[in-house]
Image (cartoon, rainbow, N blue to C red; front, side, top):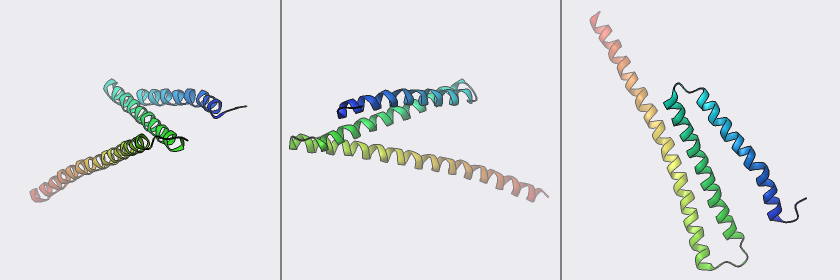
Length: 130
């Protein structure tokens, strides 16, 4: 049984790290196997590794934030500075992710509108020729 929080953390990490690595490797293998070609497989693998790096970065920031908040003897100036910077980093990451999703939706909608315009032109040309 775990005697201290550090022992409990070591035990959890011994379970979580191998499971996380197995999950990421399986995820990459599935994406690579079902990719159309090698270029798409490389893009998918890079995307997955980027997601994993982003999650690890956010987890580290949350760890530092939590450590600063529960620390028994904080240095007030450093304490506030670290909390503000880490909070802003998490906010920036969230805003970047949200704006990226919005940009993807706008791109898909623009492509759909382009296809719709082509279809309407084709149908109107066919109607005018008859």
